Length: 182
Image (cartoon, rainbow, N blue to C red; front, side, top):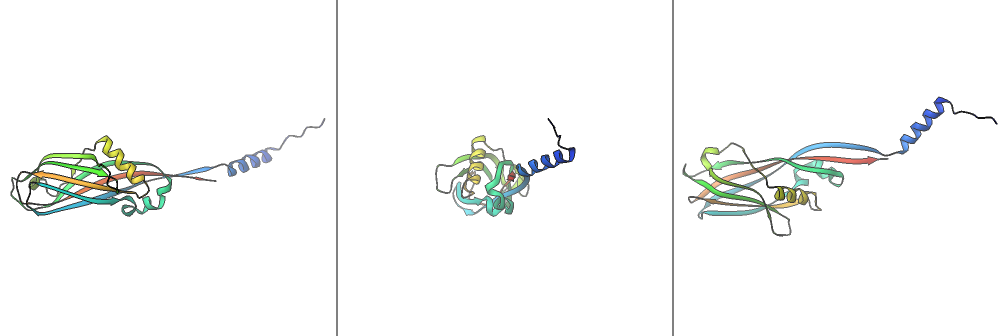
């Protein structure tokens, strides 16, 4: 019986061919921000409430491009900034709530609350928001959903009227895109 062994070069060629037919994975991490500004002008009630839409695809061309292959999404931090204020120095937001809901109007979930905010003393300085676990997860789920959109609900109660200020909410997000290539 005559046995022939495959030369080393032939073995390497077979291994390379096998690898060329196996899947290769490409991963890309990217970051982006979602911002929403609420303008309160001369509001003559102690309580202000507003709703507006945010859309991850409009906020990030990478999110729009890779949406179908995003394997993870995280809200790494969130802040609010009073960008404009016109009122007495003693005016405060006694309590404020930021909630998130789907664009179909289902019940929103609280994502963050604030209290005892002296509007004039923090104007122009970003303040951290502590996000609730449920609200944060719901926000991520909505952004990963079909429309990539969510409604932000902002409600604030102040100690004096009229209420005139602008608040900017800023969310830093990080995502991982994973694509298998054959």
